[in-house]
Amino acid sequence: MAAEAKSDANIPQASEDEVRQQLAVQQFSAAQREVQMLATRVAEMEMQSSEMEQVIEILKTVPKDRRTWYSVDGVLVEMTAGQTIPKLYEQRAHLSKQIDDVTKDVDNKKEMLADFAIKQKLVVPVYKDDKKGGGGDKKLDTISE
Image (cartoon, one colour):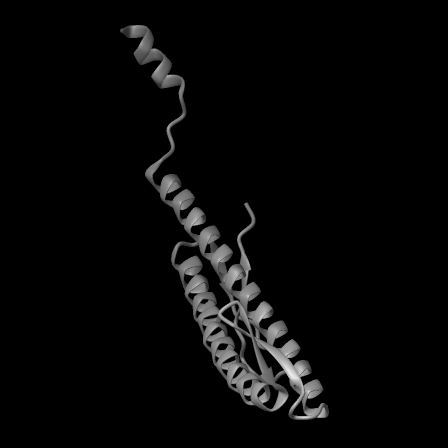
């Protein structure tokens, strides 16, 4: 019994503050990954919108009765160019709204992440004025341990 107690004394115990700090770092890292995934999603949607614009521009130059294939829920449907163009405009408008919504989510999550980092003392708030832009953008410098 004395040997077990002695071996437990040799194991360094993390303080409550250290455990909280480690948990906060893990939560911060998970939130950063989530923001990165959302930003990647925005980039993919912007690429899709660009491709859609290229298709619209090409279809504008062809005869309106030319046969085209349009994907509806993964199924190709035969249509004419005249029928496809309005559907592409509608789809592009919907995609633009999604891009705006996800971009707002990314911005909100970045702001929440910055606030969390300051609250948990993961970063030291250093506010720098952006003299070129004329705005007072705040930038955070992380603590290096």
